[in-house]
Image 1 (cartoon, rainbow, N blue to C red):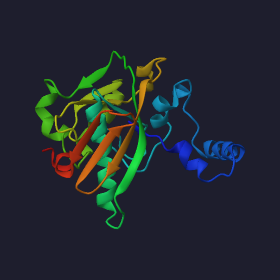
Image 2 (image 1 turned 135 degrees about the vertical axis):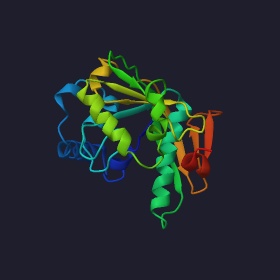
Image 3 (image 1 turned 90 degrees about the vertical axis):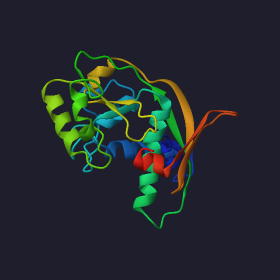
Length: 219
């Protein structure tokens, strides 16, 4: 589940399609070069491996190689994305509620001979470490060890999804093979401090709503 505002964002800054195309080229040239091992992947699969942000994530310490995060079911992906929309509001008290923003949901196939599953024995015995809601120190250390051991994927329990379904952290883009994203859908996500709503861009389409308590406390 990724935000899909890139085209609309540059369109607002240009007076014609020609100017927009030039702006897109300038922006692309300003980005880090794609690593060779993702150069042939679709951008939805390749982009997370392009950057080394100074802010860490659950299985990536600051400035570490990229990680692609996915979920086994759509609801979980929506809950994970909704958490970060809510977190943005809570971290910026003067910001008004976030209006509906388009996102792209898609499927991807992962195949690998090396993976860790934190939801089954023996690793599930340390579940309290893997499911810490705010501290990622233990999971980042685990991910570094997994990379060193040649593991490509980590399967883990979502702490944002109220039903605690599984997610996957892809450490090695080779796990995608030559795969392409499939079954793309457009969803709109609107966030307020009390709840986050998600609705598919389709008449009578699916929708989900998550309360702040569900996303922040797992209830």
